[in-house]
Length: 240
Image (cartoon, rainbow, N blue to C red; front, side, top):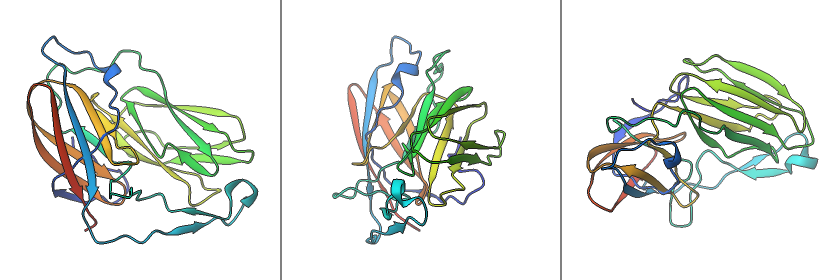
């Protein structure tokens, strides 16, 4: 399934790619021949990106006066954070655990933390408001029911997601706040850390296509052959 942010533009291109983040290996029911690992790193290969500051126009006593823009997070060595990495076609027999714990997304200092969460089909995301002010959570997915709920300080709101999709989540009261919920059809998903690193575990040997999606950079694919032990891959992403 192509990674698509429903309702928003995403690009598709074939380039190399690399990342390291924990995949939800605890959610995989694996056969005896499984157990190999893909370690990757996703690097930004495009033109230099100027760091931008976003002004906080309200609630500065909690939000501060400005924040660095979060839609494209690059490390000092051009690792790309918050990239969703998955196997385009999962190994036969891969299943989610029947009772995975909820994914969690906090509203903290006027940001969604983490910015990207992965939840299995049929799984739950718990949204928490840790800020001492009013937020809301709103999303308008195509495959899952839309929602828009006010969220006072300290309240947790839960939503169940039943169809594969990438959904954008916003706070209308603070226009710069944005997060993403990735509803995954199989367990072989990961999100890169701030260094652009990711890990996919319990992958059977074979040939696969990695699919990567990032909110500013769109889609990229990279073929990879998994042998015994750890397979290392580096993938490049850039703006079109």
